[in-house]
Length: 269
Image (cartoon, rainbow, N blue to C red; front, top):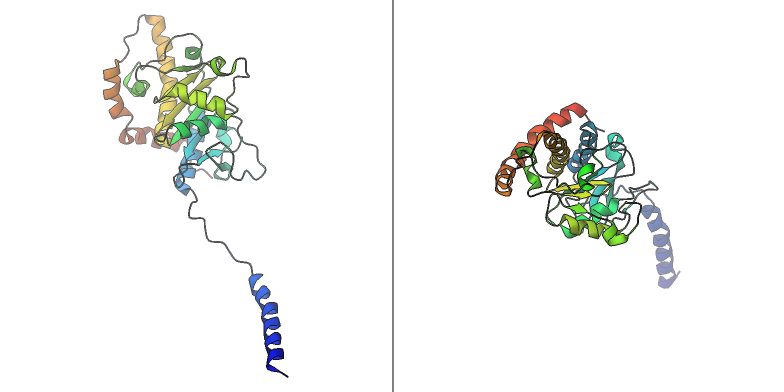
């Protein structure tokens, strides 16, 4: 047999063997950009805590910016916050579209989160809720202002987003990026924005901080309404609010209630 014939046989044998090796199943290495499991766990706790504290019910949602990719954020699939588990957490791109929803429904108002993350690089977590005591302040012209030190993050008062100014008559929901951008503009560089006839949005530089702010926004609204029935209110001044906020809204301070709230929830899956 000639050398050329042997060469052909060797090539054919190699071609037959190589695919056999490539068909062996391989376990892919974990993605280097996968979000921190602790971030996902904290996001589950945030959902459960906000329900336990009466800020959300079957509706409302909380998100966190991806700690590995600032152009993405984490948000649960469309489910009641009290029922959120780790497996419900999905990843979304900067336009509010799910990276891989795996056929699961997503929140209609995910654009609230996408727009604010685009507009505010400092924001790491967002809560949207319909907490009942806050609603009247979005429809009466009465400004929600800090009545005590725990709500000092409200500063000079929470602005109100008027959806009619940007979209006329709507169903009141933020269902696209145009409306999300308008809401983000109303929020500006603040911590809380009210949504007329709808609810509110709180932002923070961590999940712990935004949960703290969402809860104490609701508490402040209850106290302010009660105080208004007694007489004129002596609110915190902007200067007092700034000084108090530096203490009560710090990580050292917000960690204490966070651990208390977590203890009421127990272990999450």
